[in-house]
Image (cartoon, rainbow, N blue to C red; front, top):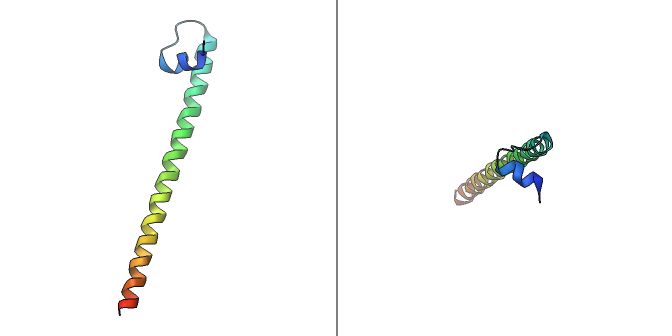
Length: 63
């Protein structure tokens, strides 16, 4: 069986090896989710800046 999945889903009751594997798996998952959130926020900011820049260009062209 996959001990990392068991350690991440259930509070491991048997052995310290499952605790170590589960904690390492959880920390890696937290880092992955944090990096994903940071990248998503950066992409959203860049999209907003692009939209604002296009609006400014359109305003200048209309004038």
